[in-house]
Length: 341
Ligand code: P6P
Image (cartoon, rainbow, N blue to C red; front, side, top):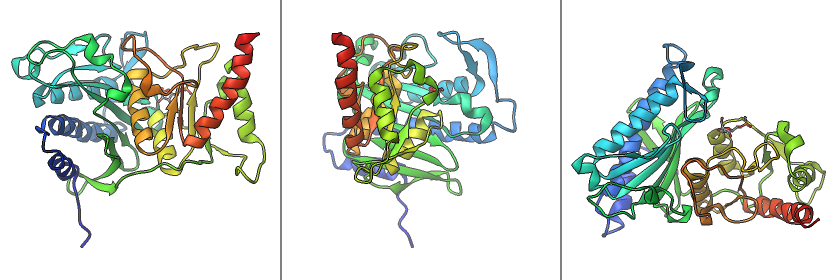
């Protein structure tokens, strides 16, 4: 009979391999897992109950808040506050950090940054969406209230990161720095079970993921790289295939497994790009680097960027290492020349 290893069992086994581990990080990961199961249930019911659509309120950026966004955010906050090892969170759905002031949480060693339901604009059309999370050890004193500095650490300081994709099957993918591991939800037992041990992304991919609807706003370097990807070349197996779902989790999950590059670049319309550094780009950058790929803002590794504010946006070039490096060559040549002129 095939051995089933549940996420819980795997987390415990990983903890056992680190004698210094106290179980606190495991407790945070289990809180996220519990939330994911509850969110997955609601996402699956979304077409049937009145949870589709918006709440009739706007978030900090004036965007309509989808009911499932808000539900997912609340579920995660409740689970993380109750786990006792998390002292606060930052969320795409919250304008500022949410400091847990209860005595148990103040002793928590970790902070969590999250996009509770990324891609939620796709809910109504039944496209895969998901939860993205990033975990840091706090730098403020244990026992006191957490501070903004706990959340504004470089991505390379993450102790864990991952995502849950609510698709044809729900999957929980995460890393704690010892490789990337994927778990598929078995609804018959209600457990995420190990299905993808030690995931590696191909160094040379053949998929380009970018919204070409924004071409008019691309830099010369981005345009030149995209056009290069479309040329026929037998050695580098071009032209590449184009795949763009419009849901970051769906696009990056596919590219992680099959190889490819996902680009949301700086444009004249959005000079900092669209995606958020802290709870979208950094967690994926950590995962992809752990899987053998690369992630940059077009110039430097994303994980080396010092954040300055919670919701800052950042351009992202992420995926198969050879493809990310080639894209940076085009930006170095074309965009640098523009800058020098
Ligand atoms: P665009 C979804 O709204 C999202 O935040 C990401 O999940 C996705 O990759 C991106 O925006 C899509 O943006 O501008 O191409 O529709």
